[in-house]
Length: 140
Image 1 (tube, rainbow, N blue to C red):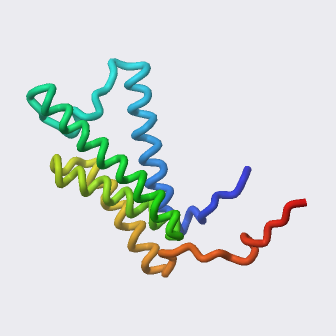
Image 2 (cartoon, helix red, strand yellow; image 1 turned 120 degrees about the vertical axis):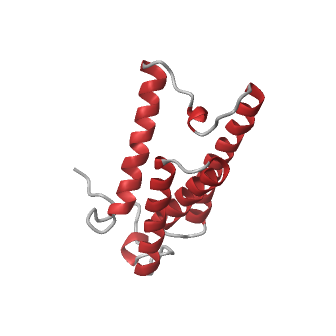
């Protein structure tokens, strides 16, 4: 089996974020394709009309799009991926909490994201520094 990129014992928060996200995706996928369907926006919104539901759906979509963009942008700007993922996850959860109020999932993601940020700051690994052995790759 191939080695994990990060040490599981030291980077448990990163793997917790991955496992939590995997659970959410699998749960949503199973309910969407093999269950009674799922209205992901209804978990956030208490909209009374289709027009209000569409506005709330756009807010959720905006938040998720910003999560993806912020993660990619920070990685592009040479931030450590764990920091970028923690920042994006924290933004996503906090923005939805501000717009729709707290929920157990959003609070959990915010806490895990903040733990990731604090871990990386305390380790002084906010930015990715290239190691010589990773740069020296030759093509034969």
